Figure 1 (cartoon, rainbow, N blue to C red):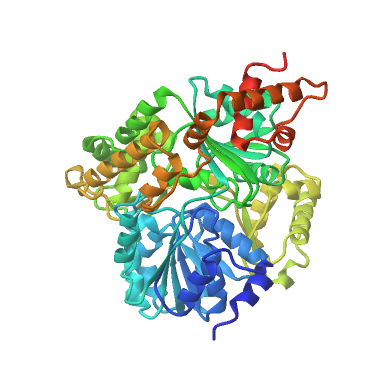
Figure 2: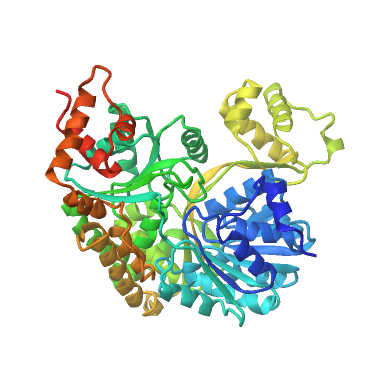
Length: 625
């Protein structure tokens, strides 16, 4: 029996109305239609399947490649009282068994899985016995060989159609060209009567700006000084994250940094500080942003260029989700153009190099030829590159290409948080003989966390140490002691890549990279890189119009707010108009109390963008002098 979706939205999420296209997508799914939803970043994709999951009887399977995102969504759903689980390589056997038992017994509504999980025949056999009412494919562009992030493991999703012929499929993505959208529906075998909903990629409140400067840090400081509010600065290396954050702090701009190499507690602490406005600017790699819904980001700046407009659009789209004016700023130099072209070579190293990496990985893990099938190994990537004198960027690309060719599955930087479940019966806890520190740790554990007897619960050793009055190391040792006593099951946090063998280890001569994995994808990447270069360095029209045409919106109009459009408007101003704006600003800025840009916009009667540009020029000139 289908429940009222408006009641679910209000009771579980506290919202009174849906965002554009959410209701249409949900109603299509509930009517049993296969549905493709193209919703830009910040468009509320998750609700389009979470609401139907609660409205329908049975289980909703959500396939997503983003392990960190699936964990975040499961945590958020549980906090709202929704029964949800996830399955991924970072779980222990007992954790995975518990989640599968709950699904088999009908005691959960949503199960998040990675596409690689479908490669397990034992899992597939058990899965087909469950009562599945909806299949959701997130990041659906990954199933298209023409998408910018094609993953062969996504092709396994087709089998779910045979297992559950009556369950509709909902495919979701934030960015897809018409070619990719058509391929998604083909690969997922959409049935007659299927529907497609696409929201325009145009965002009226978001201005796309490109600034050219060989000294990028100088321009970044000016941008952040000129626009108030929260900001994200994207870079491509962890070292640059730290360096730029420190540079911004030296200029009096509150900043911190975030990348995949941080410990889970550090990530959580920095993310929360930024979300609660304790830190204004987050300097980050692309590891930051997925699943983070902060609506009042005023600036997203790119110090390094993404390899495609799809990636850039998703990252830039994290600005201005509240509908208020916001800026997506690219700060580019001449060298970036050549570096962007080199990315193609880095992403597709020579085939003999790829085969060499495969062979060395087997030696590194001590996996014999003919063995390793369906086994997962911890994989110390830095040590691997050091031991065999391998170039890290090309080696990382080689492992990912081997994953796409389905020889292995390489999961890099999988962070797991500490978790605990009490496995002893309650009556067994009475009379336990524990030392003082362990007793305090165990008492605080039970006081601080609920549900410990029913399921694994995420914990923070730092918080327990503060409450128990012992060191964090003592908390760790106490939990290990309790684990050895079979009082609880303790899984400490860790951060390590994994290597999963999808087939037994092959001899090097049998490693073949299909044309669709190597040559075709290399060609497509070269085309995407060229489109990105045209967006940043081209001067042949409105930037947004060019981007929208790339995404298939052929009738796109000039946005009027990008830097190219602003320049055209500026040319239309008379010299007298420009002097009037400049003279008015000079007067206001020369007062003892000075003049903020907000005051200038409220005082001077002229186009907003011209006031901002004149203000920036005067500031660059050091006015008032």
